[in-house]
Length: 131
Image 1 (cartoon, rainbow, N blue to C red):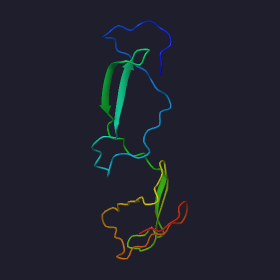
Image 2 (image 1 turned 135 degrees about the vertical axis):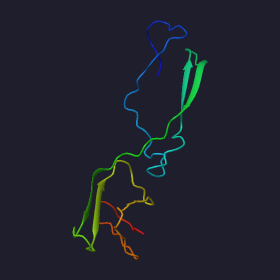
Image 3 (image 1 turned 90 degrees about the horizontal axis):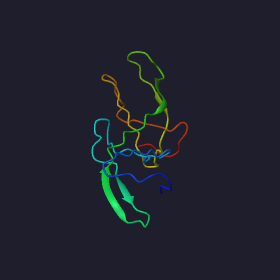
């Protein structure tokens, strides 16, 4: 951005500018619920004069971006009775893209068990094979 009016700002003055409508990365840098380490990249802040000569320069790492919360998620067993075996329907509305080779992870509460030969079939909103 270019400042086009106002008075000169002397050294030592704190300046704050808000940039509206900035879209973050589409994916967080987290690899699990408990592992949000590292950086999501770096910002470079550069102050220059009118002829584009750099006067001040700073690079700041961006802290890890947390995953976006899934919207309208639900988990529904076909037979909500203790000891029953049946289908578990998981539904959610994505906030960010789910890549064609992406993963869907479901952690079951203690006491629930998955069949040894688990089958998962896309029912609505996606195509492809789930393995």
